[in-house]
Image (cartoon, rainbow, N blue to C red; front, side, top):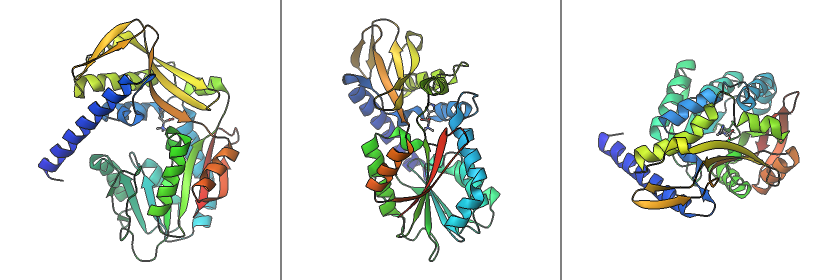
Length: 319
Ligand code: AVJ
């Protein structure tokens, strides 16, 4: 991308952040979209979260992918093109591509071109002969993959990490339906989903003793200060992880320690003592509910793999 195009993209992003902040903070309850947690500092903190003793999802999913690798490879067969939605640093793609038989291509899809670079570099280094074609697109909207994979390869969508859990259930169905429409007919989808479990395990995973998740959550306020003309006092808010029993989701909240006013881009927002900003929901699924959700989006679940403690699930769906 040219410098000018990068600057335009950055300006559009700053405007979208400001608009989302003004809308979310004007609501009752106050909310901020979780996608804004992932600036450079947020990505670094999220990486650190994945290595915490309390944060079981990443290591459990990696182990499931390892142990069910031969099974997954046999079901998918040779010559598939892997289409990954939100590839992060590409580490999980390297693992999957390493287990598949002669994969034909890797197509990481992300809205931010600079976030695709890391995945492209990592996968290209690990598989020098592999066809790697990044796709700049917002995967929460419909997009076209036509012509991005060689010949008659079959597509395998890859959506690991339980990112599906950050959508509201009806948004998750919409995403899965659009993903199906974007992939070739006959495509498969490999989906990671975190499972419902004891509240204590979940709350610890989202509020670790080292305070990394708290720093990750509070960085959103620091980002608004840096990029959206806000004047949040970070010491006046504390991070909280709440298990919502009814909606079966972990919610991250930033709770005001005392009554205060905050300015964001010239607009004043008042907080009562104890009032919170809801910054993220991480839905957990029971296998039966995930099955219903996939079917509502037109997919057929063909296999589910889990770990011995049934903490996490990896699904293979057929179109
Ligand atoms: C990997 C983005 C799905 O919800 O578990 C981790 C994000 N938030 N700790 C998750 C997250 C707080 C994570 N996702």
